[in-house]
Image (cartoon, rainbow, N blue to C red; front, side, top):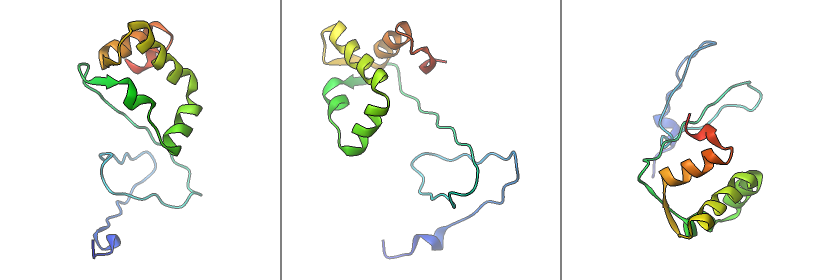
Length: 108
C-alpha cells in the first residue's frame, strides 16, 4: 500500500459509557496506554465446524505463550481428542466435553 494509513483514519468522539463496536478484521490502532479502558471479545464458531488436533497443537511463539497461559484449558482440549480416539472433532463435541469438565462458560 503506497498510502499512509492515517489518511484513512477516523476517530469517533466517545463519552463515558459509550460503546465502540467493530469487527475483529478491521484495521485499527489503540491510543496511549495511560488511558483506562475495558474491552470484551466475542467469538463464535459453528457447532458443526471441524477442529483438527494437528492444527491445534501446531504453533509459533505467540500461540505457545497463549497456550501456556491457558494450560489447563489446552490440556483439557487434548484430553478430549484422546478420550474420543480421533484427530478431528466437531466444535459441538469439544464444547460438550469442556462443559462436562468444568469449562462451561464457553456455552453461556
